[in-house]
Amino acid sequence: MIDKIKNFRRNQMFYPNYIGIFINPFYLARKNLADAIYKLSIGISGSLIDVGCGTKPYRKYFKVDCYRGLDIDSVEARKKAIADDFYDGFSFPYQDEIFDSALCNQVLEHVFNPDNFLSEINRVLRPSGKLLLTVPFVWDEHEQPYDYARYSSFGLRTLLENNGFRVITQLKLGADASIIFQIANAYLYKVTLNWPKIPKLFFTFTIMAAINLFGIIAGRLLPNNPDLFLDQVIYAEKVL
Image (cartoon, rainbow, N blue to C red; front, side):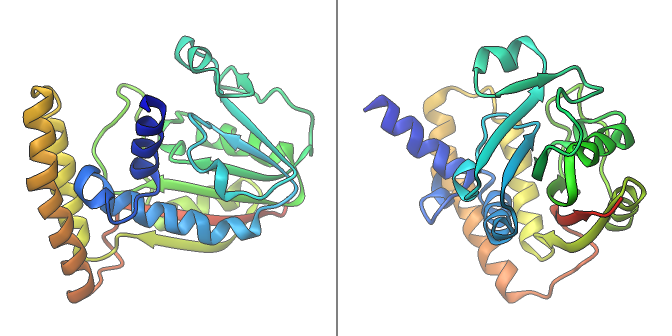
């Protein structure tokens, strides 16, 4: 029973349905991200390396022959025992051109040397290998002190092109009025983090849920603004 509750909560955190509106403070961001990853996952095949895999939250979306999770070598990552392999922060423990595809989800902002990081992804991909990359743009500092960067759409495209990739698809998520409500919930989540459990749950079920609902409505009724967005999703191909 406890495992079922944990799995249910995990599902609502990463790929929420309507129930997530009431229990996930990050519903607006996570719903958009899950939908975009699912949509682009159809272009990912063969052997896949999930770089910075964490808990492999989107593993079920990828119908691949081999799914390999790589994470930074740390006590925490080894304790989770989810990653298949670990790296030292500089070089991946693989031969050249061994994978057909790569996934890198909400990781690049935590990388201090992005050129080296992307060149390693490029190195382990086969010719014409595909990369599915997601990064936040408007978001608070998180996983401190390992939060180093935010990338404009132009900066991210240039960074990828400079490291041997051709951008096929570039999406901006939350580029509408819902971004205001998601940032409000992100703020409230942080300031209520240390509240007692019951009051915090009640606050999430009521105030944060209402903000999620207003965000959905505002996002559909008000004009989009492509210059202000929560996340970017890139689908790219190795060309060099």
